[in-house]
Length: 390
Length: 154
Image (tube, each protein chain N blue to C red):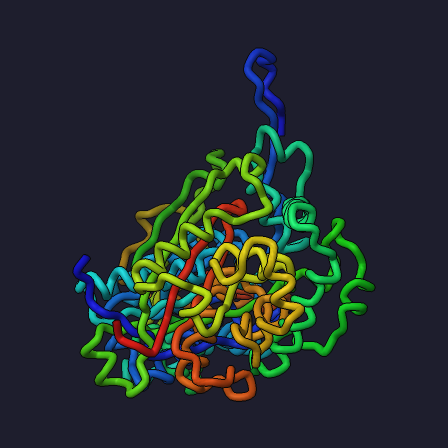
């Protein structure tokens, strides 16, 4: 495959919060402008724009991609909205990568936005109609049902205790204390997490990410442009994604096989054979506490069922052997759906450039993986980024 | 919603149960405050792109600059296009046609959609006509685009 090398040269994001005063368009602009400013670039240097946003319903608009185009810098440019539910924030990076790697454009701006507080009575209502309208919707399901069923399967299969899952909330909310954009940074104990109310057994309230408003963006550039605009390009070494069946009940929920497939697609592209040895930092998708562990296993960064033990051993701490969600993740920074995945890509950019401030992972990490997940619990989207130009 | 009577074909009604609470935003706050409190139309100017955006916006879509220069524009302009609609949104005939206008305010670069008032027939109107904005009395203004009643021929 002859593709051009593509680097991330700028990143920006808004604060993640409840009830932002800004319109969705204004949130997108703040993040996009931040990404351009950090690259020392202006909008006229951008050739293509990719926008990612999850359900239309959140912003109370249909054709939300079009609505958000000016805020994303899409005015009179080749503009594309992409969408794979919660997986969008990382998938959008792959979309931008195609456009530059293929030689079509030298630069692309990737912007993801979500304003969930618009949605009443609760953003959760936007998800009620993702379920099968013949066999499932009459039961009046909500998202917590499937997360609870999946977490229970995962715990039962491997003999994992709920205390072990709670540690993810403790770690990520603590990490988020160092993030200037974070919504829910906190110093908590496992006991605090387990004392929070049970939403749907075994999921406790403090194991659930918040609903958020926010946007995040990155600037992508082809090799020659990247080297001209920055001394520290962060290269996109691999991208991958995979969708499993929409009949989510027919999968064995204990393991995200689609994440494994997406990860290997990206790892092969990056020339990675031993992910556990060759990746220094991970930003797996953590909308729920157990999902971080589930996804670390899917990403081949822990053997099946072993992520909880590695977590307890401190491997995934910021100063551990394989820091996971040093940003604070969705549990700590917040979860404006599509923007949350891009936030993880921004975090890799800052970490790999040594610009993560109080969140900086020690030891000069050279390579990281970011992953998002979504649709009807069926999509894995993965990007591998590194300081080395492969 | 009615369930169809044909009992052989299994169908049932459903809905996406959502409502939205829209925010005016950073630009909209400026615009609606001026409209509600002073009955004025406020835009923002991008000096480098030579654009005046009405309603006020916080950023320029062309160059991404933050727009801090506010401009109060006169409530008058030119009719860019018009139509008379004979049906409502549910495809039901209207008792009286609804006249609609696209208007470029004299000092703005942008065009506003609103009602065209006091006309009953397309022969009374022509593109390029001068129009004036009708703003509701202060007591009736709520900070909405409907604080503007519409436009009348000047």
